[in-house]
Structures are given as C-alpha cells and as structure tokens.
Amino acid sequence: MQQRNCLPDKLWLGFLLGFVFVFNSIDHVLASIHEYRHESFISRSNAFFFHGGSEGLYASKVQDEAASTDSPNKGRSFIRFESVSFKRTKESAEKQIAMRQHTGLVEAILLEVKDRERIGGSYLKSDLLCCTPDLAKEGYCTVGEVIIQKNPDNPEWPKRIKSFFEGKNEVANMAPPSVDINSTGMYYLYFMFCDQELEGTIINGKTVWRNPDGYLPGKSVPLLTFYGIMSLAYLGLGLIWLLRFVRFWKDIMQLHYHITAVIALGMLEMAFWYFDYSNLNSTGKRPMGVTTWAVTLTAVKSTLSRLLLLVVSMGYGVVRPTLGGLTSKVLLFGAIYFLAAEALELYDHLGNINDFAGKTRLALVLPVLFLDTCFILWIFSSLSKTLEKLQLRRSMAKLELYRKFTNSLAVFVVLSIAWIGYELYFNATDPLSELWQIAWIIPVFWALLAYCLLAVICVLWAPSKNPTRYAYSEEAGDDFDEEAVSLTSSGVKVAGDTTNKLERKERKVPTAVAIREDLEEDKRE
Image (cartoon, rainbow, N blue to C red; front, side, top):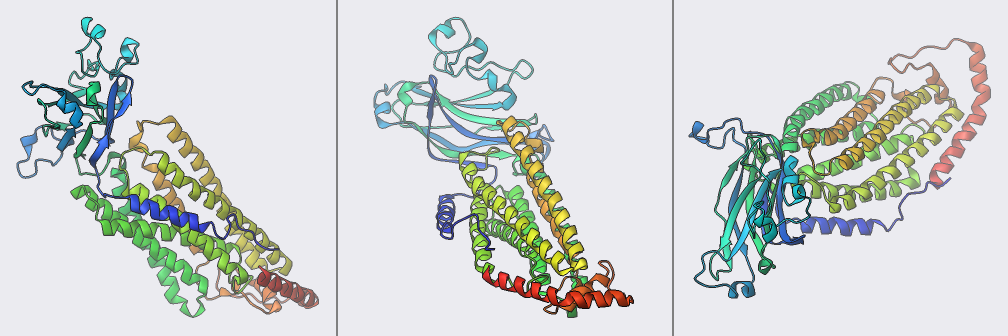
C-alpha cells in the first residue's frame, strides 16, 4: 500500500513564500522597547487613538529612585517615553492662529487593564470617548479631553500625560517623563486626541518598559530561569547517553546517531535561548545573531524530532534497512514543516513584543497545527503497519519494544490534545492578557513534553551489548532468536526446548516468504 501525504508535493512553494515574507517584514529586534515609526491614529467613536503597547509589569522593589546612586534603574519598574513626537498635516497647521499657545492636544493614557472601564463614558452609560459640551456642563470632564474616571483607591491612575501643538507648528514633542510602576498588573498605553482637525496626525519615537530585574516582558521573566534549568537537563541526558554510546560503540546503529543529533540540538537550543533572554533582560535589545540562531535551532530540532518519531514508527533499522521510496516524501514533509515552524518562531521572537497575539500569528499557527496533525496520522499509520509486520514474523522482543513505544506515544498525544484544548480555552477567556503571570506555562509545557518524549526514546533504544532486539536482520531465523532476548538485559538466554526448535523450523519457510513480501512492499513505497 502506498503511503499518502497530507500535502501535495508542490505546496512547499507556498510555505517558502510565506517564510520569506515574514522574514522580510521584521524591521527591528527589541525587548520591552516599543518603537513608533510614522504610525497613524485610528478613528473610534468621537476620538482617534493609537495603541502604544501593553505588557505585564511587576511592582518596583524600591520606591525611592535615589536609593541606588550607581544603578538608578535597579529594582525599579517604569515606563519611559523617549523622543516621542506627533506630526499633524500641513493643512491642519495652517488653519491655526500663529500667536495662539495651544492649538492641538494629544494625550498619552496609561492604565492598568482592570481600570479599562474608567476610560470613556461607559460609567456614564455612554459610548463616547471624548468629552462633549453637555458632559462638561454637568462637571464630568473637560471639553476636548478624553473622559477619565479616576480610581478612588489610587487617584493618580489612570494617568493622563498631555502634549500640545504650539501656534502653526506641525510637530509637537512630548516631554520625556518616566512613570514608576508601584502595582503589579497588565498595563496598556494609548495615545489619543479628540480634535477632528488633527486627523492624519502620525506618531514617532519609542517607549521603554522595564521590570524590576530587567527589560524582559513580564510574562517572559520566568522563562529565563526555565531555559537555564532545561540547558542543564539536556546536558544531563546527553552525558548519560554519551556514556552508553561510548561503552557500546561497537554495537551502535544508524538510529543512535539520529538520537544523538536531536539531543545535541536540544542542548544548543536551550543554551542559545538562555543567552538570548539573558542579554534581552540586561540591555533591552536582542542580539540579532543569537536570536536568529536560537529560532533556527528550535525549528530544526522540532523538525528532526518529528522525523525521528516518524522513521522509528516506520520500523527503520528494525523491520526495514532503509526507507526506500519513502525517503523523498519524508524529507519533503520535513522541509515544509521546517519552513512553517521557522516562520512562526521568527514572528514570535523577532516581531511584535506586546503581551498579546494578533491575527497574523493565527495565520502562522494554523499551518503548523495542520502539519502536526499530518505527522501524528502518518506516525500512527506507520506504527500500525510495523506492529502488523512484527506480529507476522513473530518477533516478540521487537513487538514488545514497539508496543511500549506505541503506548508511550499515545499518552503523549492525549496530553498534547488536552493541552491544546486548555490553551484554546486560556486564550479565549483571557483576551486582554489579564492572566499574563501564568501565561509562561504554555510554552514550558511543550518544551517539557518534547524532552520527556526524547528521554523515553533514549530509554527504549539505548545502546547495549545486544542490539539484536531491535536491529534489522535479513535472515528469518534471527527473528525467532529474539524471543529469548530480555529487553532489560544484555544477556542471551538459551532455549532448551527441542519441540520449540522444531516448530520454529517448520514456520521458517512461510515467515521468510512474508519477509520477502514486506521488502517488496517497502520498495514500492
């Protein structure tokens, strides 16, 4: 039976074009530094607004800025405005009176997400964002300004920072204030104006968001420690595998080299991510080279891990010496998956750094989910055929090995499906990232799952003195000798039952025929 792929052979061109588009669309690599480059304001209700960023921030550890003269930022959490300016259209500037001091107002509104209902007239049962003459007469607000209801528990919040255009000037520069964060929460920044004559205004500059221990976004702070621990975990697994590898190097199979490559990639991946996050936390900027390597290593390891599962499921080195005609299809599928995974990783780590994801990310996630689904179907289809062949050949040791592998893989798949359901529920019930403090567990789960699955493969296919329990053999008789091989011992038990020997000799001829038929089928595939 010919193995069918989930994708046409030429569909990889579409993924390649998408990968190139995502890579070319990345124009900056920063941490908690939001840059605004000729950004436009969006009309909503009776106001115009621009979203300046949103991040989870922890409260400052020190309340006095002068507490540390050498390191004024140490222990402080703040949002700093740097070189922020607003440029209105020339037509709008010409309409103003040259001698007039204030001819246009742009406000920076900084709020904690729990106070979002305090912006606009929602507490007045109105959809308006800007104050009207009628509301001003009732004393609720000031005409031309955004409606804000102060928090009675913290009268300084939400914060309003005003910037004015002067006379006929086209540009208004914002004063460079620094707002200290003394309460842990998810913070949003909006730039807004109510004057309709300012339509067409653009914003330039940047804002710097800092947590007490560095520039990592709030939801990414625990990942720095996690990548450090995972680097040590992969190192430990690699050392144990290396000792077995060196001890039984004479009995090493090709599959063992593939497993070694995945372990090495895992170590490099975690080490690069740790270094990347550490530099990000210290400077606020990502080292382009390190981040690109980390992203690429993640995509390569993800691809090779899936291919390793696939070739193991196909019985490579166990029931077939090569993949035969399936080699090109496996490689093509791996190349397509690598491009899709690389595009998603590039967007996640080199693109927008706000603590929420948009439609662009969804468009990149769907191809990866689709390909993962194809991988799972292909893997279990191949496992079914492999188990069938082993049962036909009565290779009990190999059959037991593959049953353990199948059961382990089924558990991991069930866990993955359950976690995907939880992740969808998590994102659906938290559109404003209010649960940002626990959002880090989502990527952590997938990294731990991949590590555990690799550890299971290392245990099942560990190098030993007795590789015949899983090594491919063209001689039919070798398959029956495996029945006496222990899966946990390197010794060989001697079967002394003469009757069993005679029965095996009687079954030897039909079994050899079945093996030849399997080999012919493998070649057709």
